Length: 316
Image 1 (cartoon, rainbow, N blue to C red):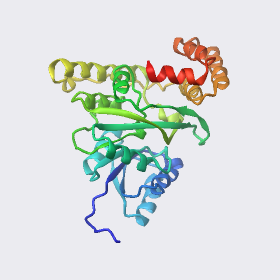
Image 2: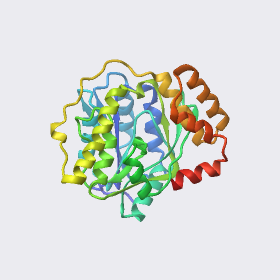
Image 3: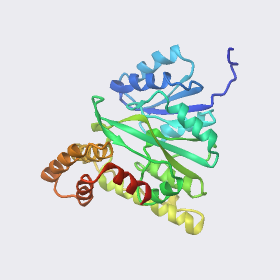
C-alpha cells in the first residue's frame, strides 16, 4: 500500500555534518539499510566546506526520506537544535556522519521505547572503531535507569550518537556549552524525574578519529562541571543560572590525540575482554604519558574473570 503524502514518520534521525566526506557515505548507507524504515533523515550541514553536501545530495535525490539543511556558520549545537526543531517523528535518534548504525538499531530502540513508556531517553552499547574502520574494542552498557542516574551524576555514561528519545519538543542543546552539551542535556532530562537508560545491545560503530577531539581538557572540564553545578542548582531552587554563564576563552592548543586515543583503546579492549591487549596498552600508556590511577585499577582488574568484572559493573 502506498503511503499518503502527509504521512508523519515514527522516527526522525538528526545528523549534523562538518567536513566528513571520507565517512559520510558509509554512515548514510547504514541508516538507509535499517530493518526499520519508517523514518526521516535530517542532515544539517554546519558550515561544511568539503564534498559532504554533494554526497548527501545524491542520496536525497533518490530517497525522499532525506532532508538537507545548510547552515552557513559551523556551530554543532545550533545544527543539532535545528534538526530537533524540524523533526516530525514521535522519536528522535542522534547520529554522527562518521559513525555507523548496525542494521537493527532503530528497530530495537523504537520497540524498547514503545514498550517502556516510563523511559524518556536511551543509549546503547557500541563497537569502537578507528579512523580506518578497524575494531578497537567495545563500550558495554547495561539497562538500569536507577544505576544510570547515579552514574550520570558523576560522569557521562551515555554514548551520544547512540541516543534515541521522545520528541516532546521540551529539550534542546544549550548553545553556550561549547562541549559537554550532551551531558548538560541528560542532566536537564533527569531534573523533571524523567528516566534515562542504556541498552546492552551493540547498535552502533563509534569511530574514534583525530578530529573527534576538538576541545581542550580545561574547557571540557569547565563545561562538564558547570553541567553538574546547574543540575544541583535546579534540585535546590527549581532553576539554574545558565543565562549568567560566561564561557571561558577558547584555548587554541590542540588535545593530545595519541594520549586520548590510547586511553580509549585501553577501556574498549578491557570491556571487550581483550585483557592481554588492555594490559599491553596500559604499560605503553605509563611509559609514554606517566602513571594514571584509574588505569592502575584497570590493570589489576584485568587479571580477574570477566564474569566477576561484569558483576561489579552491574551491582556497584
